[in-house]
Image (tube, one colour):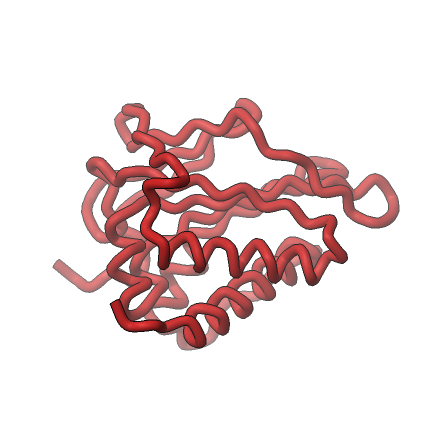
Length: 181
């Protein structure tokens, strides 16, 4: 596999920076003349404000990547989750536990053990986590979960459900930005 470390670091940095900016921002903006990858990226991000807390869930499908990264993301279901409390001052990043991920019919996806994940994908996830920690002075926490896709495919009919703290966060597929059948 070719070394795409430079591209991966840039992509991870921009992805983490965008996620951090959106987490911290009180409102969002709509995309202007979005590309298919931008449509996919926008749809696969969920931000849930709950009083002083904000939960951010992102599914990172192949439709948002290019080259080797796109191929890997098509082979896995990669989910990232952050949970931040804002009790009147600086944010407190909470540990994320008890996450369940299913397909649209409620069948659980099989989580992949960390030592079985492709090394390129491990580097991608590590780059994002490192950028987040640097940007938050070591306080930032982001949980990544990697699953076998089973029937979940970004550009096929179906869906993905992430269950966290009693809430069912859903992604219908095909996601926006997929090529027309």
